[in-house]
Length: 111
Length: 109
Image (cartoon, rainbow over all chains, first blue to last red):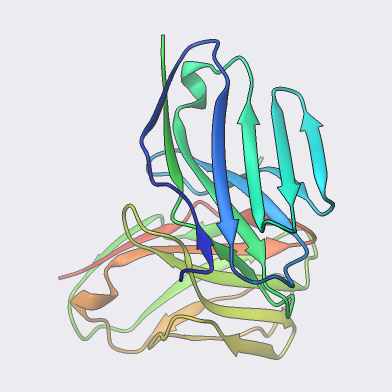
């Protein structure tokens, strides 16, 4: 089992819809969870991080964490074509030494 | 505005050459990292450092080496480049979440 798993997609949504991106992780001791956006040919950029169970909102983005289910999600409201990118889920390992990344989910928002 | 800089942005080099990929950050972060990413694949940690004179190997076996003589500088060296080293190399530094540099796309021919 991979440490951080994401559906590679592509996930296609129309402009204005809600995009839901999901991630599961294997290390039950993980404490910190991050979502990055990566445009083609570019480096990842941090969107949000979440440490506690529940929801965390930042503008059009909401991160959701359920440690019992080892599940993290990212909701993007009012999706825009500029949101089209690969979204990477990352989990800090229990030792706290580094982030472990999933393969990413490709999102395509059509206008 | 990028506070972490990688050079070169692109590099095409012949087999057997020695190369150094540069990474510098101006944020004063103690923690720095090197990741390798192939197209469509996840980032794999190859080296990390928690401060000056501290370096550790990551999860992915790599023939590269790193040094951390100054807080702001974390270069990666390949003594003898091979085609299997062709990849994108991403440097990052962290306080909480990571800030990535723009990456070096290396092609070994």
